[in-house]
Amino acid sequence: MPGLNSSVRRFDRTNIPEDVWGALRDRDNAARANVILPHAEKVSSHQEFLPGSEQLWLVYSEPATSDIRFILSCTEGPLGKYPIFIIPVAPIQLASELLQGPMEAFCEPLLNEADFRRQRVFSVFSVEPVSRAFASAWEKIAEIKCINEPYYDAFFSACTPETFVRDGSQPVDEVIELRLAVPQDAKKIRDLCQEFSETSKPFTLSSEQASKEARLMIQNEQVWVYEIKEGDEETDIASIVAATRQSHTVAAITKVYTPEKWQHKGRAERLVRRVCRELLKTHEQVVLYVGANLTSAQRLYDRVGFQATSGPERWLEIGFDRAEVDLGHW
Image 1 (cartoon, helix red, strand yellow):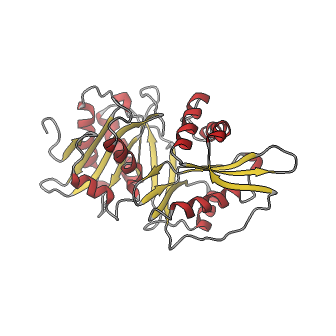
Image 2 (cartoon, one colour; image 1 turned 45 degrees about the vertical axis):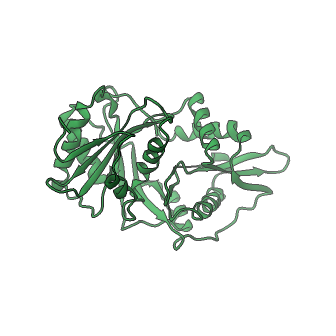
Image 3 (cartoon, one colour; image 1 turned 30 degrees about the horizontal axis):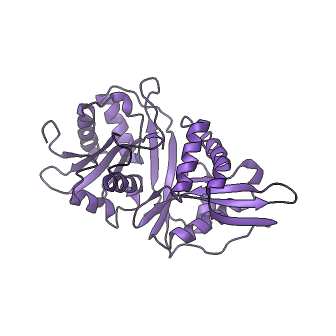
């Protein structure tokens, strides 16, 4: 395409080609592609979804070959613009000297995109070496400094039918129900989503945004609740688990939250296990990212059966100078 680096191809929601779909859906890539594939499938197959929104993909192939090495998405969802997501395509090569060229090749077409503003790139999320290489390239080419402390530093892991641990310790509660959320839960889930966002600064949600998120998750059957009643107290929601990114073979758990009142009793673990059991009926893998400093959460997911896909794999979300960018949400 004119104006693009010869190694980079650009696509919108109307023209993603079969080789790109094939790379995203390939068994060796599908788990990592959870940040790109489900959204790409939705906006491509439902042109009426978010009309007029920004939906852009860039694909880097080895020079003089058709071998896809990286896929970048610059897209937006119902709650706002997403970070730049980049997935490496198998066989993965992450040596720093092999990353500078591809990441710089991505930066140029982004900046040359019609109606694109450099403020759009508020963060990048990928495997650690890729995130660092893109941040360095964008800092140099777009002249916007990256923030030293990552917004998100996490390990990536997956649970399969073979690794899933069906039985675990059971909390002793008087009355409980583990179930998909229903519209009547919307207010409580709104409050929990807003509380959860306070742990993910700067990506906090207003009450209105949290209401929209809760409504969408309930409508799309993407959020489960641990309903509890103790003594004469009103029925409450002790924990929520959301799985908002789902492709044909992979489902991603994207939110696990238990308010302080109900913590330290194994309720989140029990709900995560229930959600995994349901998702593994229709998917080959359930994946998630867990904060590198959240050792208790890591142990919880270990007990359910989540394992590193091929050794510890660290993912970083690196942000850019907030005085120079427009924050989105994911």
